[in-house]
Length: 517
Image (cartoon, rainbow, N blue to C red; front, side, top):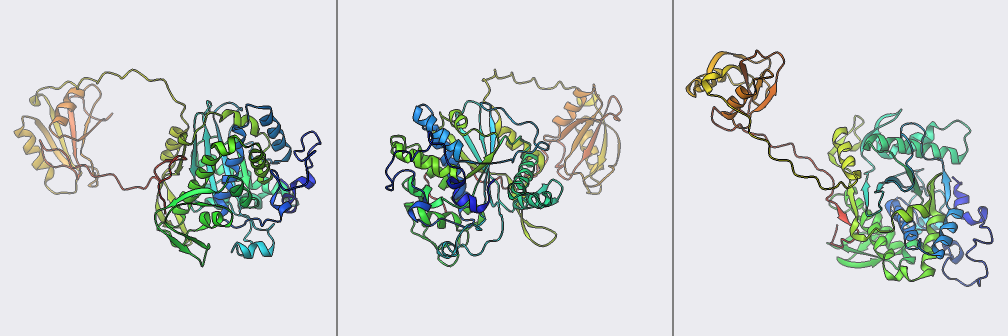
């Protein structure tokens, strides 16, 4: 990856060969392909562009989709390949094998909000403050199936409390910095940043249970140009906002088109929003969706000049892994539509603090997260024939069922009461006793293998009781362990409602223009 100074003028150090230079043979007047540096337009800053700059990546990649079928598309693909920066972001360990192009893939989009390359004038104009180092507060996993029929974007809140390989538990946005710190002493700037990217990839792979095939990182520069090239982005606010002091965001309620500095303020705001960073994530997703809608419109499809501007702008701002082929990715996504692009947030439980008293976001446990991402990345399957409903288990007469009753509910005398009621219902109670613990919450019917009919008969008398095979159970005798949910023989047990969890935001598609905070 190039240094910040090199990134400001990428074409100066990576001149295109004459046969690919889009400026060859053209007049020096401003036109499609003019960069912000050429026109004197200010460049953006700050983590507000966190996902807004990520939108640039998506926009640049999808723009190639629109061009792939023509020789012009091939030409612009070559321009992008000659301009884009490369980094060694995919680790050789901790991420399994890299997938082949053309198969389903997972692409990690990262927004780098370092402001080191911005001038004092730009920092002041954008209310960006001072540079706080390299932050990766925007992290989005994009899954594209092999047939390219859809795309799924999953956002990762920066304060997600996760396990970072080699560094224990910490906030997710610390992974990149830890990786940079782990780089060999004396390593080049490019190698240091590659080490940061690799640790972030390993962290996301471990968190999701997925292989990360490709990586794309964007900085803040060029954000203004993108939003201007696409003609601004339409957003829809449920309420008017006034965040003059922090982000500078002042917008009326209702649909409106934003670009340039206003777009940056829109994606930066978190103060004054009902859910702070969570609403900011929604704004980031909505902005990306708006960019994609514009790029799939006739205004871009039929304008070769805008196509070239988008490709050049995206390539200049992009740093991708060594093997990502932008044109082939575009080919894979050529059938995508706004309605088949969905946005979600990783499932989480709720707010918390760590041992140092810092705010963190607790995610769902590993099994639930892996199940979520496995379902997200599952390939469509052919419809299967619905299996026949299994027959109800066989039962016997209650008089043929011997029952041992154990009290695990914590309520004194409950075993004797249950035994009396069972006897009244015709069951044969052989003993009563306390269970090994008084903390059972669920009432259980335990039995030896082969005694399914006996267990089914007893369970039918206690609707909702859990049944399970117990190796140590005596053949011909069923054990009844009373839990705190026990409500009496012949009565259903009281099933406790599951613990309330927040699973992130409901998915919304790029075609959704409903109002947001």
